[in-house]
Every structure is written in structure tokens, then in C-alpha cells.
Length: 221
Image (cartoon, rainbow, N blue to C red; front, side, top):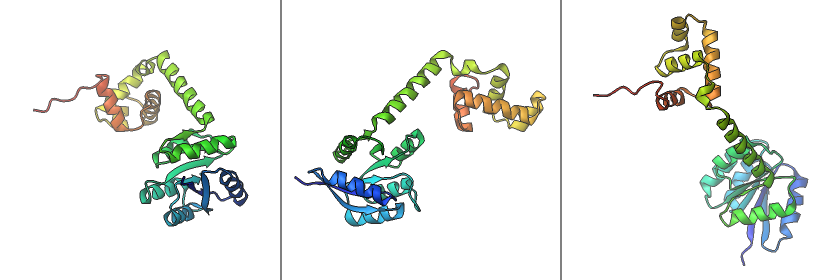
């Protein structure tokens, strides 16, 4: 049976040596190369064509996320497994966005890493149990928050007024003039309503206003 061909990308030599020893002890795995930074990881992956790359998140030079993007572009069949100390949801999301198949924490038991390598090599995905638990807790928290009070109901009358005027295309300065408020006050209302509604740009704001029938789509004849 063909072995899983692995490449290690981490800027700590002793750590790479430890992982090499651990994985090489598995009958179905072999470490065929190493890299100490993102740029080298891309070059080595193109040269040796590993089945799985174990990628650290913080390395010198080219970012690990960009290195992952380039490796996946050059060799879509190569699986990327992030092996990191950071239990950070933002890093996890960014890793998945650039094509990683898994995310393992460095303090995980060795059997979890071995299982992760096998899972992603077979075309699956893997998350460290702690990261998965963190995501589930966050999801539950958001559901509870959403059930407590509808987002629109949390807006004050003034915030709803500013929302309507922004969605209609008025600038902050124009709204301040029409409502006889300072620009800073209108900016504060805008910030609060977008935070409460979890809206991050003008397009989302307009879409929300249309969905809630705060403004109407003009009839195009």
C-alpha cells in the first residue's frame, strides 16, 4: 500500500524533527520534505509533490495563508493541514477560505494529528475537538442572542430614522443637516445601528432596509 507522503512547513527546527519522528513511526506515512518559511513551502511542494502539507501559521516571509493559496493553485490535489498553537476562529476561517482541509492545535494528543493526516488525505476534513467545541459554543451563543430580541427591535427611534435615510442614499452630512444634528452624532447612530444589525457596508444596509420594508424598491417602467 502506498504511503501518505508528507511535507512539514514550520520555522522551528526542533518541532519539525519531533513531528518527523512521530509521523515516520506510522506504517502508512513518510515525511519526504521540510520547509522553514512560506516561500520555501511553495517551492518545495512544487518540487516533491506531497500528498499532505502540515503548515504552521506564523512563519517568516510569505504568509502561510498565501503559501497555502499558491500551493492549492499549483497542486489542487495536495491537502493542507494547519498545525498551529492558535485556537483563533479568525485564523481558522481564513485557513478554510484559502483551501486548507484541516486545523490541528499543536497541544493536541499525537493520535489526533495522525487521525487528521489520514482524514484529509482521504479527502475529508478535520478540526481539533477544541476548535470544534469553540465553534459550536459560539453558534449557540449567537442563536440565544438572536432569540432574546429581534435585531431591528433593538434600534432606537433615531437609529431607525438614520437607517432609513442612509438606505435612501443620503450622506451622513445630509442627514445631520436634515435632522439638525452634528455629524459626529449621526456617525455614532450609524455605527450603533450597523453594529446591532451586524451590517458592514452600504450594500448590506440597503438590502436589509428593503427586506424589512423600511424603503421600497422603485418601480422601473
